[in-house]
Image (cartoon, rainbow, N blue to C red; front, side, top):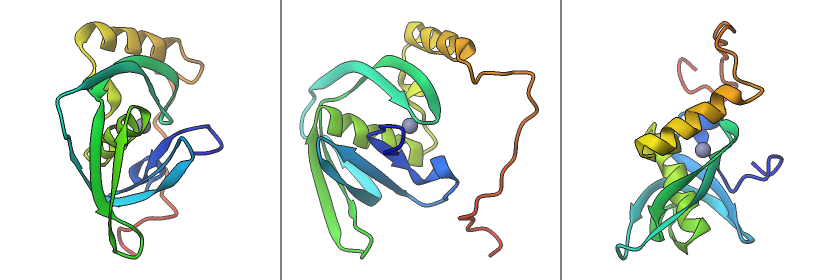
Length: 143
Ligand SMILES: [Zn+2]
């Protein structure tokens, strides 16, 4: 996450089948296990969002402005993150990953079209390449 200047990373993005994400926003860093989000109000934000799993693609994405993210630390102690702006965006983006949702899924039709165009134009996009299946070194199945 830090190598790529990301603000968050969810375990499934690196092949770990656990409900945990890391974050580093405005010098507040940590991780949250089994996050549950609550929204204290109806306020929204709209701004550029990207994803370490979709490098170089940034599209304006609507999110809630304020969030209370409740979960646990690595010791099993309950913790909560009260955040707004980028922290709120990060918590929503990473919790979505844990539910199999990408920020692309949050876009309206016009913005999704813009995102898919950016993906097709990216240097890593290659529809001719055979799919690559990797076994996670952190695998939780069959071990
Ligand atoms: Zn992401």
